[in-house]
Amino acid sequence: MTMRPYYTDPYTVVFDANVIELKESEGKHAAILDSTYFYPTSGGQEHDTGFINGIPVVDVLEENDNIVHILAEKAEKGKAHCNIDWSRRFSNMQQHTGQHILSAAFENLFNISTVSSRLGENAGTIDLSRQPSEEEIQKAVAEANRIVREDREVAVHFADQQNIGSFNLRKPPKVEGTVRIIDVKDFDLSPCGGTHCTHASEVGFILTGDTEKVKGSLTRIGFYCGDRAISHYYRLHNSARDSARGLSTFVDEMPTAIEKLKSQLQEKDTRIKSLSERVLNSKCDELKPQIEKASGSLTVVDLTDDTVDANELRFVASCISRVVRKSFAFHRIDSNICQMNLNLLMSEEDANAVLNDLRNKCGVKGGGRNGFYSINFERARFDEVMEALRGRLTNE
Ligand SMILES: [Zn+2]
Image (cartoon, rainbow, N blue to C red; front, top):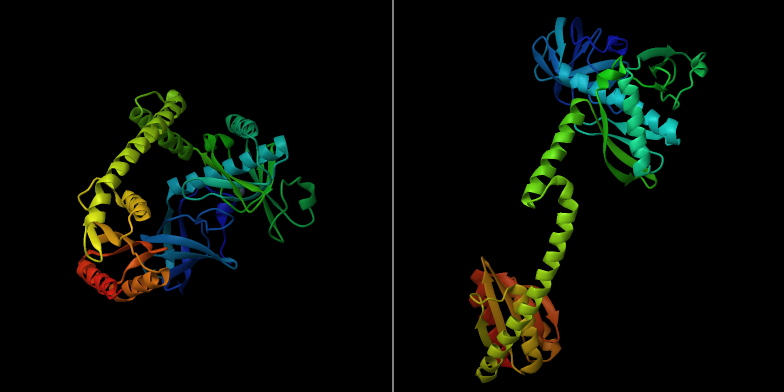
């Protein structure tokens, strides 16, 4: 059983211990110490990183009563000089302590309980028993920051099954036997095995982020403490500033600027629609006589260099197919794909057979009905498709 002095001293990050067992865990080198300050991933908190005798500790796991340090290289048994990445550890302590305080604020003020929590690499999250209003969130955050500002003492107690009843815990413990309790003075008592600050002011500042509905009725809310809160603020600030610059306005004026932009876009859309209708009508007028006059079983028109795009091409072909009784193919080539709209003047059964033929022999994709088809195929197979089409149409 590994001793865990981090339970009562989360600030020691340079220490000496002994490697008492070497093993492999999922194909990686691992070591067990007689006593360790390395925190293993558990209870929603990420593991510490650092070094054992200069060898990087890349992961820390809990296996039964032991703590297993996953190493980048093989270690040796015996004396071990260890150090833990303090900035990662301290950030976790800030997030974890902040989480207790924020959860207790929701509970104490609004009877909203925290069902589960995660600290994560960036934002931490808590899952709340119901959706708080914007006002409730702001009040809970203000209350949590008041506790931070007052620098409440954060103590650790150990309780056994006999005296656990004397603690008014915010939630029941998940472990049996001895229970570790985190006590934010006169504010919160929670069972927890993680690393926490000993004074609330070390949390620095608590901010909340996005909310989302999870698992049916729960609300997940992101939170940031200490330096993470500052980084989060600047990420938002920079993004808002750049967006405002893009709109040639100030951050506070952005909602109005966006509304204005939306209505301008809508006006332009309407204008574009009416203009493109005119273009398409004149395109139909231009193509109609060309198809009517053409001889042969199939008139093929290449519209690659035309102004109409693939969707408009389909629209024009469909309009003409309604007024001209002839088989024709309009196509355009975009990079390596040929888009084609086919009007086949034959029974639907025959037309479907032609299309199946094209699918099977020439790798044609797409479909349609009543003799009108929108298809596409590789540009290199154009001649092949034409040959197959003409062959079928001459046989009619
Ligand atoms: Zn905790």
